[in-house]
Amino acid sequence: MRFSRLYMLGILTFLLLVFVYEYRMPSRFAWEATYGHHDKQPFGCYVADSLFAASLPQGYRVADSTLYQLAASHRPRTILVVGGRIPATATDVRAMMRLAKQGCSVIIATGYYTDLIDTLGVEIRESYIHSPSLKHHVEKGRVRSRLCWLADTLGYGRHTYRVYPQLFDSYIDGTDSVGCRLLAARADTVPMAVEFRIGKGKVILSSTPLMFTNYALLDGENYGYAFRLLTVAGPHPVVRTEAYLPHAARGEAPSPLRYVISRPPLHWALLLTVLGILLFMVFTARRRQRVIPVIAPPQNHSLEFVRLVGTLYFQKSDHRDLVLKKYAYLAEELRRTLLVDITGSTGTQRIYKKVAQHAGMDEGKVAGILGSLRQLESSGRSVGRQEMMEYIDQMNEITNNL
Image 1 (tube, one colour):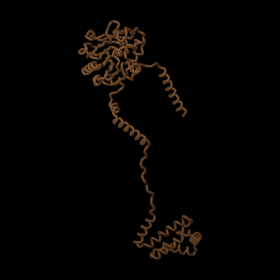
Image 2 (image 1 turned 90 degrees about the horizontal axis):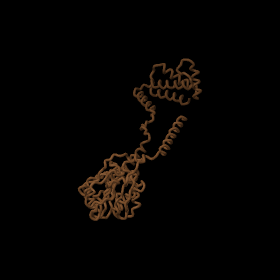
Image 3 (image 1 turned 180 degrees about the horizontal axis):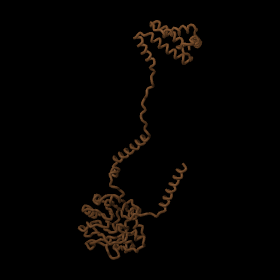
């Protein structure tokens, strides 16, 4: 028992030390760009969505609708699409143009988008410049690059943001097309953000989607760049759509279980099934004993045996044998209770006297009964029915008085 207690104490101490060690370890960050609404890692959009919702007076929300679905409503809005690679189709491009003609502003912030060259004459390309990761850049304290805001719209003058180069690896190609206005560029005049006026609205392209993530918004004053893009879009409610992000980035898993949970009838069916399984486990977890068979108590067949034997003797009319069987039973009874042998050849008078004393009967009567039985045993004469009954009554009188 003492060894078991020491063993358990050692395990608890070890677990406590592991917990303290993990608690005091520095936080580990995942540097993958997810742009997820619930992602609090450096390249998620949890901070961005919270900051925009609290700061933009016209309103801000996150939706899961495509551009085609958003174009069904004719309310003026600013549609924000943020992602590393946006898998948009020609239908989405036509919906984007329709939104702009309706008076909406569409901001596309992505690192790669080539399907716009036929519509707007521009495309967003990757620089393909090999550089260390942002994590390595921050740990080594490397110098930052300059991201310049060039437009002078709504009172915003030129401004330079000091940003790690990994946050804007892409650029916009084809900015010499008609109707394109340059909003921001790298220090070497590489376009980073452009604006197109289409109908009553605008289409703003930005090759810096990472500037909308948690790390960029919390890095110095770089949050001003994202706010300037939203301000240029116009004084409309902002809707950021996550329809073009992977399921994992939206906090969803494309699994059958998620589909079941998303449907109320299936959800309730699943809950009832789990509840039924739990109840089944609770009520059947106890050890089940085998069925105990019902065993009837043994019956007394003595009377039945006596009747059977009596019937046999009655049918054979062998009265002598029946008297002798009764005499043998009487001799055994006296031998067991009085320790006398009435079948012996010696001391018969003394035996008769002892039996008479214990039975409370006359000695002469007892001697006559036992003597006649001894004589019947030694002789071969037959016994009639009436005589048999007399012998049996006399022997019963002796046994009943003992």
